Length: 170
Image 1 (cartoon, helix red, strand yellow):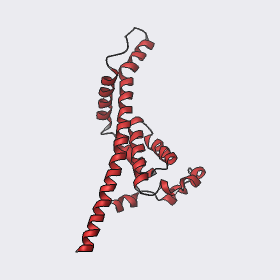
Image 2 (spheres, rainbow, N blue to C red):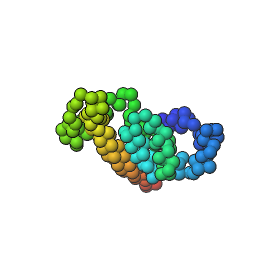
Image 3 (cartoon, rainbow, N blue to C red):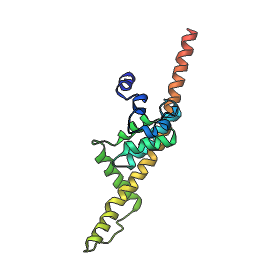
Image 4 (cartoon, helix red, strand yellow):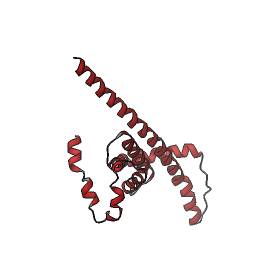
């Protein structure tokens, strides 16, 4: 699986030679942005999940820019944004609305007859709870993603050490 995925992704050299990325190529050559280690992967997952939940459109470039500035793995940050895709988008936004509605409480607006009041009522009734719910999802998912990557990486390394020790003994 890893070999298949790595064969499909553009190489670092191809990305750095892209004419649109030339102004940033010298900064994008930093090894932490491309190296797969525990810290850069955990940062990339956290930033990708944050952007994936919080930003409805253009989340992959935003996650890549956040990863660029935080010295996180860019590929992991971009891949983690796929948590919201056309299949998961409706249930996530519905759950975010429900959570935001619970956090904000009852309807905050009073309905009027003018268009401005109706738009304001819509914003308070639907958009505000959804935004609050998405913000909470983004924060919790980022923290959980960061922690799961660290714990999973630690488990994987410990497992490899145990196998190595058993191979040496037997």
